[in-house]
Amino acid sequence: MTSRQYQELEEVYEIWREASKKTEKSGIANRIVAQSMINEMEKAVRKVTVGICVFPIGISFFWLAANSLHVTEKSWIGGLPMLIHALTAMEIFLIPLLYFMWNDSFTQMKASKSMIELKSKLLKSKNNTVVEDDINATTYEWLVPSWSPFWKETQNSIDPTSTEKALADELKKVEANIESLCRQKAESSVVGAAAISSLDVSSWKSRKEGQREFLYFILNFIAFYGYLLGIIAYYYPDDVNNYYASIARFWMTSAESDWLGNFAGDFCWTIEPLIIILSPIYFASSAPKSKV
Image 1 (cartoon, rainbow, N blue to C red):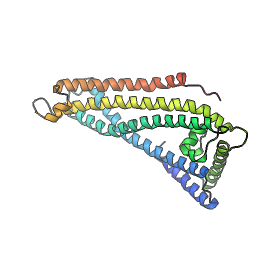
Image 2 (image 1 turned 45 degrees about the vertical axis):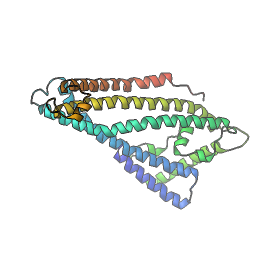
Image 3 (image 1 turned 90 degrees about the vertical axis):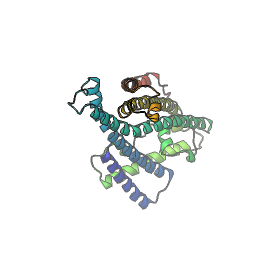
Image 4 (image 1 turned 60 degrees about the horizontal axis):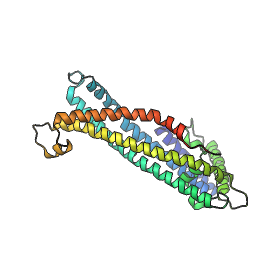
């Protein structure tokens, strides 16, 4: 998802607004569609921000790798001062990513808890139904996990006429699902019954993803602080008596804190890729199976 998709989402959103004015619809389905597009635009901005932060961090890895090979001891690529500048840039751009990891971990775990509460409401309700007040863009995606609106995919071109028709079709599908979820007729809601089963899987996955994000935060925070010790050791060596630098180094010598910090950073950033590679295998093998 890039800035191009953000622009496309804006165009689709504007077409939806114009179409809504013509039809004067303001029901729950319309609100779900609007909120879904806004959520996707926010995700697009978030991914662009992450990309902006990851790019300089990736460049800084060049000097980290060179340092591991003892190349920075020479003056070929700027020597030690250039390594410190690269580490400083990496630390600055890592801060927003740490915030995202922290926020995502608790957002995912909170979502897992909300899914369990929603499932409990479905089980206690008449014929697996929910009230309209419990349905928004987020809960709708939980209740109808198969929902994949066209605006989530990159469009080759935006044609107002065809887009307006696609939006109308999407609205009809959402309205039909909401009617099934909220109806209080004698027969059971098929959509609601499917949601009960899928919520178990989604809740488990959301909780595990939250725990994984928290683990990412821990590993990256240790790496962040570890490499920060190297910067402190460079600017505040042992012969510079700085009280706050000594506290930051936990009263170790500059050489000790530099070595230990570099080791901690390298170790954590070696473990993290292993988790990224192996966690999908764990999710696939350990996730509860849907009964529908």
